[in-house]
Amino acid sequence: MEQVAIVTGSSRGIGKAIALQLARDGFKVVINYNHNEELAQEVLKTIEAEGGAGLLVKADVSDPAQANALIETTVAEFGQVDVLVNNAGINKDGLVLRMSDEDWNRVISTNLNSVFYCTRAVLKHMTRKRYGRIINISSVVGLHGNAGQAHYAAAKAGILGFTFSIAQEYGVRGITANIVAPGFIRTDLTDVLSEEQKAKIMARVPVSRLGNPEDVAFAVSTLASPRAGYISAQVLRVDGGLTGI
Image (cartoon, rainbow, N blue to C red; front, side, top):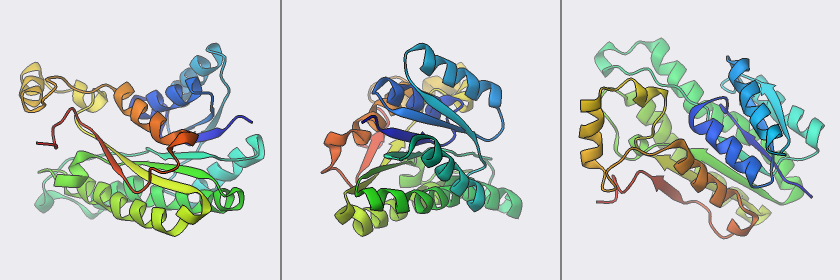
C-alpha cells in the first residue's frame, strides 16, 4: 500500500523540495499552503507530471482548527497519514529591544505552535495504526541562537524539546520523531544577500557552499523511510559541517 505524507508550508523553498522528493520516493503527498495557491499548484503539477499523486490543502497551521482540518482532510482523501513533516515557518528579524509583541507571537505561533497543533492532530491516526514518522524542521539557529532572531531561535529550540518528548511518549506505538536542522540554505531569504555576504557565510562552512533545498529534502527522505524505524529523537544537522567544528 502506498504511504501518505503531509508537508506543511510546501508551496516553495525547502518545503517544496521535500514534497517533490517524497513524491519521487513513492509517497502520496499533501501539499499545504496558506497564501500562494499558484505556487502550490505548480508543485502538484510537477508531482503529477512525474507520475505521482498529490493533494492541495489550504490551511494556516498556526490555527488549531485549520491544522486539525488539514489532517482530517488528508485522512478523508487518502485514508491514512504515515508521515508528517512540520516545515511551515516564517521569520521577521529584529533586535529584542525593538521586537514587538505581535512579531514575537506571530513567529512563535507559526514556527512552534503549528508543530504542536499538527502533531497532536495526526497522533490519533498514527497511534491507531501503530506506525508513523514525524519529522520537524528546526534550524541550527535553534541550537546556537543568532543575533536578531531571538523569537525564531526560541521557536526552533522549542521544537527540539517537543520532538524528544514525542519520541519518548509514542515510540512504543511504532512512531518515530526526529529533527532536521538546516544551516544556510539557498531560499528566498538568502537570495536577498549580497555576493559579499554569501562569500562570508561560505567561508564559515567547511564544504564551502550554501546548501540547497534538495540537501534538506534528502535528509527528510531518509528519516521518512519505513527502514528508519530505529532512528528516533535525533537531530540531523544539514549545514555543511558549520556546527560540527
